[in-house]
Image (cartoon, rainbow, N blue to C red; front, side):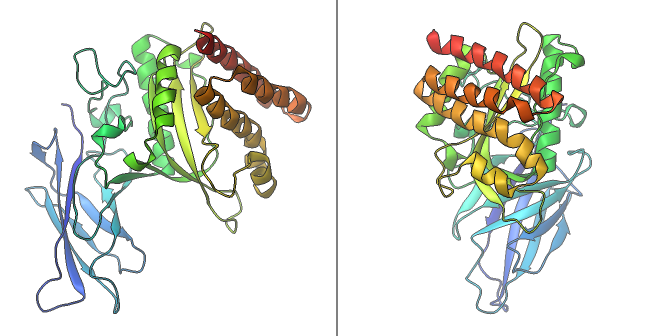
Length: 347
């Protein structure tokens, strides 16, 4: 049975008799809102200055969290982050927020297991939305696209570990559908990521341009969001960067790529991969080579600039002497990927 998860939230006015208490209500359903999900644990995680609260959804899928607001707190929080524990829906815990204005009703957010697919045009062959279909729990995968399916006021925030595991499962699932063997998968590793936030505020013309190029490349899926990247040192501040993840299908040698693109245009103190790498852990320093290449690659994709691609890989070659054998292999695979992109830009 196809299943998803629909979370509807409504922040009600303060309850009578307690000016410092509000009631957060919602409904958890599956099957496109048709089946109420009972017994799902719902815990408030954020805002952190509100005491934690926990409840479970009832037989009708509804739940209610009484939030005790400290003295001087505004009428209601600007947003909430909920921890949902539903073993029958998720293979592990999920952190799912709904960011809402004080008087807004947040609805229509689909969190769960949509099928990785679609033809990259924004529409499925039958005219439906980009091939997204819910998966059964044992077929777990994650993709949130296109932006038009996410309400203007909403963002979906996924725990970084859950996101990485879901993307791996999604890639494997899709490659299996393509008839590729698991050994053919080339999954570029991600640096540590605490959270991935996906929402319509990130939708820009740049995304549209990249999606058009993606159709020429045969990109299977695009997941775009903010990655709160962190170093190995807990004392280091998190760095929030606009990040896109492009799943590119297998090449002639059977290698598929999940390409991580760090947006070069996000202010973030004029983000510079090399400057950032100097403050980061050894893992970050190893990753910085590819992060820099993909940062410039994002610009090249937007501008159709093959010379930018040449600059990227001139740097890769210059730095190759200090790379490990694994990193050299990865750089060589990026070079092959660059050639495919270069060909697409010429078409």
